[in-house]
Image (cartoon, rainbow, N blue to C red):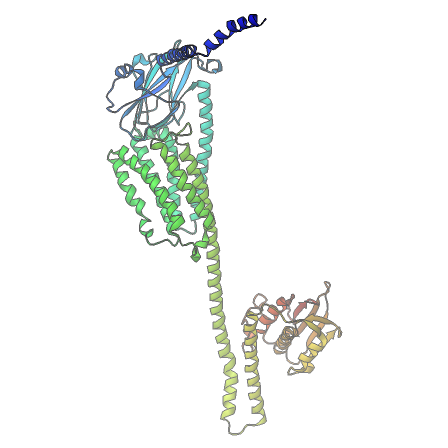
Length: 639
């Protein structure tokens, strides 16, 4: 058994050892390398379905390009961004007749080739199945072709054919060499067209709203910021129409232009100027550091030479510098907002700091990113200008919000200024009326005092005249002091229990003719209120009724409760020779009826009484009549 077992082991083990020996491993590695070489050779033999070749001389013919080896063509998937170049870019596209055929329910025999940049100057298609080998030409330097399906792109219709074939596209432009290449069935192209139209319509509608809003905000309060915002929003609409292909589609034929290239380039630079000129004027309204102020109108100095360069045919140079200036000014605005504005200044409270900073931070990052696609950065979206459209729409929303906030703040400030002016005018008018009243009221008492003092003998009658004159002056000064004190009164003293009958009778006893005052009503009615202020009301109304009643008539004071349980005191007198005061002005400060000017008075009593009644939570109303007039004061039973 041991011998037999040893023999079996010797027969099995050598093959296993030989598998792990160096020679078999080497054979496996060689087999793998051979497979990779065969696969790579097959892959090399199969040309890339898409490739591009840059012709710096722009002189190569289609035959010379076709003769180029496959290695000369750089592969690309969808988008190209080669910056501002005067070279011609040749595209080689492999057309597979079977691609998407099963999904093509509309015109299954054709494909749509789209280059998603309507600002490319010239695009020439070389398709062996079309036009006898001659190029089909489109671009914004040429009129529209009959096969233009999409305003946002330069499009060609291609027959599917029966076999694989290569088509070549030559692209040259004065604007940025940035675009995406899309090859799809007709149905998919029409769907993309409808989606783009929907997006474009909503986007343009939003810009129109911003423009109308800018005009509406300017009405009644024109200033540099609003004027420039209107210009900027108007140019935003024109610029968007240009980038979306409407200028070439409609304006070119309308103006009889075979090429709209110069016009579109001019619009691009002009719109860039309007953005940053508005931004600098907007920032200039804040308290900025001294180095910022000379830069407010610098966009005019920077972009004017670029506009002239476009007019004189240096479009590519102007556009490339324009892109760099767009990035530079975006960063400059961000720096100014973060480091060069004194946010502690008072008048900057018109706009919230966080919203201003948020706008310029967003704009300072989004605009350079959107502009970078024109400077050799591959676009993320199929349409290279989507980033521009998004930035423009977002900036419009935020800036419109800022300007709405600013307009509201300015309206509040204007209203406050108007109110302050009105109060100042009212104060001046009251001072003039006050001085006139003093001159009128002091004239007679002072004349009496002067006469009495100049008299050799002071009889009883003269003494009474002088005492009355002094009393009138004292009463007038007391009313003036009360009026000024009322202006500064915001609180009332601790309320106490007041018996109104006792209060009215005490005021009547201190009048010139106590017997002429008749007091009616509840003798036990009390209220909790400020005793000093209630006494001022009663004294003024009693004095007013006694002064302007008909001679030899009484003044009636009634005290009671109203239906809402508030206290009512009614002061009634007959209409005297002064007549009935104007109900619209009877409580105005310094107002006196024309028939009352011959009598002593300040025009402050009723004004004081009404304001004190309102301060105590009640009111004073005037009820005129032909024979009698009444003043009714209502006060709460407890304050």
